[in-house]
Image (cartoon, rainbow, N blue to C red; front, side):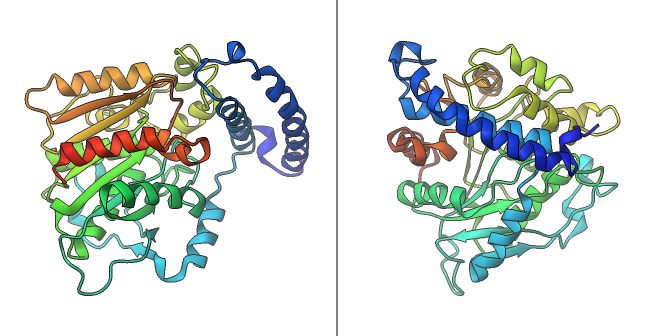
Length: 366
């Protein structure tokens, strides 16, 4: 059941009160985290402590009002003009197994090119990063303010263009699992349709979208005849998605200081999970922890040691590595909270992103 604050006029009341609350606590945060000894980690800057706390307040707002920010993404897609591209779900045979069309049907989905679309006649070997932003399956982060810093890092260190792809959010029965994963496949076939060689494609995603990228790799290895990409990078992937997601996160290490909140994750999980009990096949896609698989795609799994997801991400990475000859590498970023790639520009953590992406260059043989 949606919270009472998700409908007007109470939604307007909540927004007003929440703005007042956020403005009120800002001075308190600056005082509270001034001494290094009072910070979750002495290595954290004052800026990181304050921003993490403010992000939590933002998630409180989104969770209570059930706002998705998709209208903002749609507006920016229109403003981007020629940099915007629509990926069409053309071939129904591309979607098989638990991705087969049923209540969830493949649909057109859009994204933004950085710095510009691939020009006609461009080399088929031009590198492209197909990037999916996170959002707990219920928030849209396909805006320019997130796409620009991600694409800047990918261009600088991988020498690639970036397509910043916004999949459907889980807002009703037609967009629960497997709808977002259908969209990931749609975007991948779109990039291939441009004539880009699969060996020139790197897929990447953060948080919930990291989960979807892992799902894409599983799908390509087990059910699809589509060619494999050059490599994949997942940043702070959400690998343990269960009906108890909020309660499980609340008792995890670092949960109290990380940027995520338990109610937000509970909202995301219950919106994404099928209404019926998932089959074993579906469960492996939805919650990859304890469901490792064989992959030929070099996969980098990144997590911050200061984030609430760290232990489950590390456990999943270990499970993947233990499958013989899996080209999987786990990279931990000391003291980092959730989602390095989306946070680095505002927190001044480019050297940490550089470390991951230079490792990718070597690991993928770029």
